[in-house]
Image 1 (spheres, helix red, strand yellow):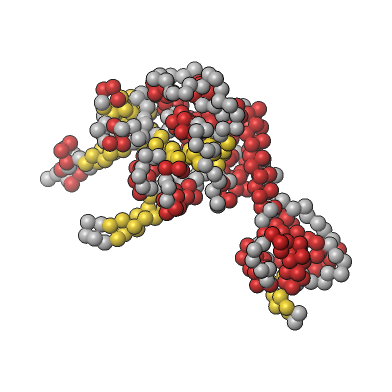
Image 2 (image 1 turned 90 degrees about the horizontal axis):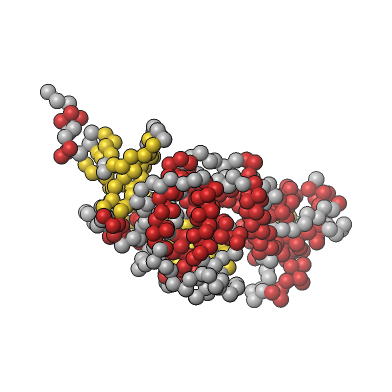
Length: 447
């Protein structure tokens, strides 16, 4: 009598599982390819340093992986782009030069950002070997070349998902979960506040592995069940302004568009060769992925201790694929500038102003305790004209406890900052870009 597995060995019992890519335990890799001229899709299987074409791949007696059909709407309408087959390239440096030349011919951005974008394209093809990643963005008004940038850079990235045509945000979650590619998105296509809030949710969760977005889905029986959608992956965005969330802003490598006159050699309309050139580059990048996946990893030597830990966490993975020390230092300069801008922005906020008041009080020898009354009085004298609201003890106490994390305690003279909390001040000064001021009063209170 046949076993269960033997009984279902036949092809007619095997279930097809539509797949775009897979990494197997033995190191083999599978990637979907598409030949639009022949109206068909297939697989390329990379194993033991060589590739072969496949129409399906069996993973066990009951299941086999198959590519999405060419007639799938997302594939046929080129909402998601794929290579057609692996193509040989001379070297990684030569491939980078080809990518940068392609960008230079079609887009007008600064030379440094052009180089950054080229490395970002390369990074998207191995991004899933990392746990964190940054995003790429252009910012500017209508007519500054944002859409051209998205089309040009996006067409070279790993499984680019052109989501700008989506009428709602809902399909974007599903496309990201299914294709695990690079999201290409124009913020201006989503006009309503709730849609933008959903986009922000994707961006907030999508730069670190293991943070899916939960959405309620209705089952065939009418029951609502939470469903997790994986949104981790590279993202290239175009926006008109800044995001309100500082943490989200810090995830982007950004370029301001429209700051200079368009270069004469940049075509007003994309040439007919644009798509064909992009396809050949995607083919070369597919072979780059096969040869380099998981070969790079974040190195401690790339961490810059002078900048925010979060900036290091996000940008070190991109630095790790840069072999040229000169280019690494150029990119570090960009990240340091981001750090300075972040510090300057924090330094203009309420939290920084409260810390400056604390510094001034600690500088006075007669200070015996940091009372909320004294902090509120000094804050009112210095900054009340900048606020429409009334400066109260309750509000200053809220800023201290909830936004600065400084605990207060009640005394006979009112609430004061607990002496043990003074040890936190040096780190807070650093975080908000303030010079640390030491004084006898501070040391006395801490003791």
